[in-house]
Picture (cartoon, rainbow, N blue to C red):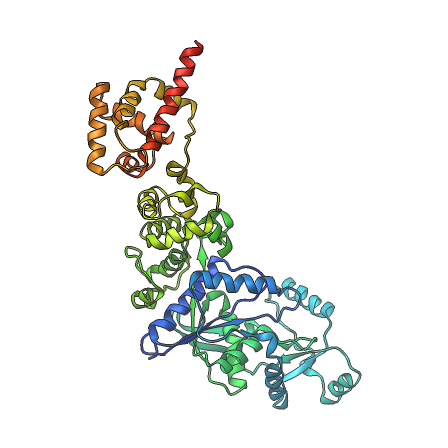
Length: 486
């Protein structure tokens, strides 16, 4: 029996419509297809289903390609465009018509809408009534001769149900009554979704179609088309959909993010791929992976359950922060160098010190955006203080005077070795007759203006001695002027 391991190598595909940006739900499908292809030694292909002439745009296509590139989901062959393959769909339809397996439908949209309302009134699913299927060959030929607008419909075979084996859901049967004779070619000559998918998947050699379970009825239609066109159908597999923690369809608030929004939030692309692949337990989250190849080796498609996958934005953010803090320092330094304007003080920091700065700062940041907000701790000459911080500093001036005195013998351009930091703090504590928090907290406030941030030892080893004194003296000067005015 074919399963994820015994079948393959799998040739999979991702086939978005360029009518908008990619969201986490459809990106999850792309990731699963990519990992299965890599794990089995197959191929991952990309097809843009751009047959919706009104809604498909070049901007959406560019956004899709950029998003997949950002995620590292590169296809193994050039991208296919359905809009460039219209002759293939026409040939398939001509073949079906020659066998009387397809026929022209002259029904107007108004007639079809009345049929839909009638079906709804009778509590029946909307399906084509078969009106034009009953036309005589002569009547059909006369209407075509008059040039009447028409679509081409597939003539359903007399069949009670359509069955297939799904690699996730097992044996699936769809009643043939769930749909009627469906459209193959629209009146404008462009193909329907189901026709184009079957022709393209066969032409591209796709042997595994892995997609969301909302396509189950489409799968039944497509299997009938494969049979009618005498084509080998691929193996099908339908995963559950992405829902929020309450089991409801994702909203923006609960994680229905687009990939451009993920970029803006500062999420790590490898974390997005890892998290979406891990849902349903298909990829452990306790380990971090350096590449898609590593993920593919660890990926367990048998864990893709039949139920929906629960998305937690907070879990995704937490995983992204882990990936960020474990990232290559050299790569992150390069990213900062490229993203900060030329006038930013960061560029004046000694290049040898930059990796050390990032190593200390990123423990207090979850992404590069947050890290950039911490850079002024090391690059700006002045520090901003809240009223609360100034109140605390006013009560700790002896500590700051003692620290300034302990730092006075150090070269302003130098940085203190870790052992020297301990000496300086001990001297300041002894002179001010304080220790513990009463010593460390005012020093931190004077240097950063904040209660939190990198460890104090880290601050004192990475800040130039001259900048430490300058910040301390700024605080002393503030209160010196205040006292003078009083």
